[in-house]
Amino acid sequence: MYLLSCVGLVALLLIASLFSFLETASVAISEHRLISLNATCRWANYALRLKQQLDKVLIFSLFGNSFFNALVTMLSTMLVLHLFGDGHQLILSLATLFVTLMIIIFSEATPKIIASKNPLLVLRLISIPLYYLFILSKPLIWLIDKIVYLITRALGIGNADGTSLDELKALVADKRSPFLDSHRSIVLNSLEIEQLTVKEVIIPLRNVEMIDLDAGINELREKLQQSHHTRVVVYQGKIDNILG
Image 1 (spheres, rainbow, N blue to C red):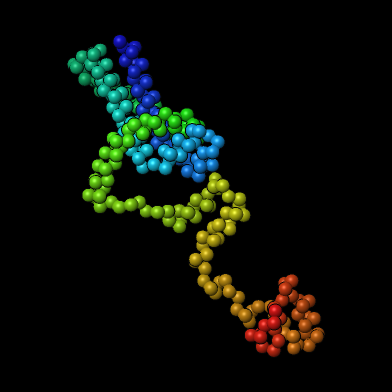
Image 2: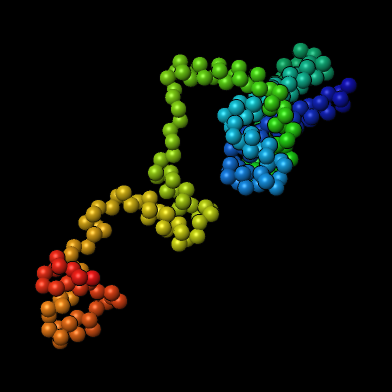
């Protein structure tokens, strides 16, 4: 009886951890990465479907994790009461603290750390079974989603803010992003182009290196010898009369 209860507690903790795995891995993985794997990996197709319904998947993960953690707490409390009775409040309190610690370690922290570092491996193992469980749970998820929506509307909370320009720059500048250094520099400069003024980009015509065809041969030879460019603007008479 006691052994069976302990096995049940471990099983419930493991099941609860699956939802933590799903929650973190679904957020950590890139949708574009799953699209690239979709053609060759069957599991990626299911993971992509989950990723494309991320808001509902998060509700599903939170509900599943909370539900099974609650079962762990309830079963452990029943076990302690059965063993020691309700007169040992200190033992019950210590048991509750111990179970809470186990939930945090094995059902919350450890799965989320593993999933954040290895989302592909995690989704390869759990995406197919949890996808079908997600489909079966859709009526309940819909109900929770509507309740949350009504609460957020009542509180006047609108849609989330989009990605700001500074956040986008930080993503591109991150050395872990998939950019070559030269490409990263080009992208960052293109993002900052709106901050440039015309004065910073355009060279005034009088400052452009030019030669006048009406000038003497010696002056032309001297200008061409001193030129820093392989192409020089040519005009005749007035600088507005550019020939090529």
